[in-house]
Image (cartoon, rainbow, N blue to C red; front, side, top):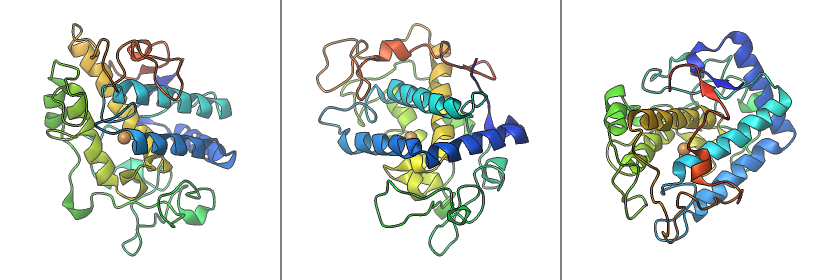
Length: 275
Ligand SMILES: [Cu+2]
C-alpha cells in the first residue's frame, strides 16, 4: 500500500531511495516525458477554449491522475517509494530540510540561478534540463526571492473553508475552492508556491524541478482535506459544459479516466495523517 508522507518526516533511507528513483527515471528518459506532457497542457489550457490541466475544474483530478502515473513510474524502479508532500505552511523557509544537499538541494546562485548542491545540481551530471523554454540546461531556483512569502496556515484554512467546489465561468476568473486553491483569485496558494521557488518551477516546464511533485502532492492532500470538511459538496460542473471537463467526461491525455474516477484517492494511496 502506498502511503504518502510529509517530506519532513522521511528517514535518510527514504530520501535516498526517492532521489535514486528520480535519477533512474531521468536516465531512462521517462522523466522528461512527464515534463513534456505538463508543458503541452500549460500551453493549450486557456480561459476561453478547451481546458483540462489548469485554470479549470479538472485542475485537481488531472493532477491527481498525473501524480499517480508518475508515482507508478517511480515504483517500477523501486516499489518502496511513495511521493512525499511538502507542507509549505509549515516548512516555509530556505532552511527547511527539504532544501538540504541530501534531498533536493538549495537555492540557485545569484549570478545565473544555478542550483549548486544536491543530487539535481548540474555538476552532479545526472540532471540535464532537456525539455526547456530557453537555452539553459541546468536546474535553476530563486527561493523566496524578492521577499516573497509562502502561504500561511491561516490563508490555507480560509480557502479550505470555501464550500463550493468551482463556479462559472469555470476558469481563472471563477470564485470557489478550486480557483482559490489554484491561485488565480484571492490569497493565491498553488500558483504562489511555483513563483516562490522560481527557476523552472515558475514556468510551464515546472516538473523539471523535483519539488513539483512534492508541491502538487500537498495540493492534492488539501483537496482531500476539503472533501472531508465538505462531504456534501460535489465536484462541479455536473454535465453539459462546453470546453470544460464535467464530472463524467474523460480527461486528456488518458481518455479513459473521469473526474468521478479520481474523487476517492484511497484506492491508490493514503496519507500519513488523516487527510
Ligand atoms: Cu503546479
